[in-house]
Length: 372
Image 1 (cartoon, rainbow, N blue to C red):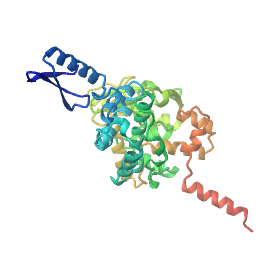
Image 2 (cartoon, helix red, strand yellow):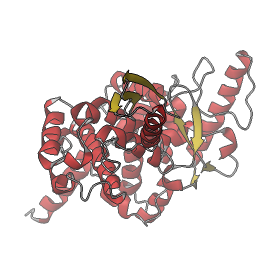
Image 3 (cartoon, helix red, strand yellow):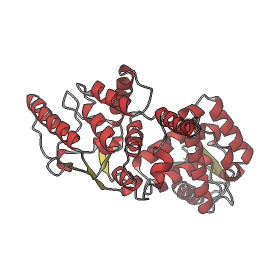
Image 4 (spheres, helix red, strand yellow):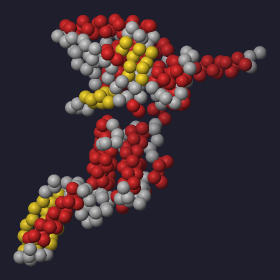
């Protein structure tokens, strides 16, 4: 419950002092000889603060006060990671720009100057666009709640910062994928890279795997969960879009996993730990678990040591999808391995990007048609 206090300014007036929903101290003077009337006004103002209403008009929020209400709303609708990303975008970029502006006073020129400023800050195009998307989503909800008649961001939907042209995902070719795997073999990254290249599983799905999820005799791996981690906690959630799935494992992968499982069991035993069915598959050499950040950082270092083109851990998912299609796996089968239920439409649109060798082979085939 919010708090405030009353002080008498003169024999015929009282001042109420309190903090609004944004934490800003506010005061009002009421001309009365009765302290009870001042207390009633303070109680009314505190009730408005608790409801995140603006004291001058209960239907006019500032961007800052409404952002707090919006975060509370979406916390029950989206993933914890999404909430953290939205909070970060608000704190670092959006609120410093127009946190004190009333929602009803926010205009298209405000939004356009904000978009231009994001670009001038030197942010990557994709990062700037994500920040713009947070603002758009928040204002859209304000419209749904009838706090404002329309969103000033909607007319500028095509003016959001564009992803940089050089942000296209790198697709590792077959030889590069083998090179990456060999470079990882004697490192903490071997199992994450092995599973990523063979199955196309996402980073957080791999981190959520336990040995119970892998049936080496049947040659199957069940992807039941994904991890979510902040600085102070590690939790499990369903895979992206709730798509739990069973992935088939090739014979070579099964043998690699058998050896890795035995090697891990021996290593954990030396550390005084016992490998159980619920033991996570991806451990570090000191017995601790990989986090999202350590895995991404170590992958970046591994790519650099291997002399491969710069790419992210997620690039292995693209590489796996591309390799399956290049080597004749039907799109609907490859899509199922990756956890898509659209029969392969998304796979062909997003993941099946041709490599340079694919394009050269296509050019050679066309040229062959005209060979004399």
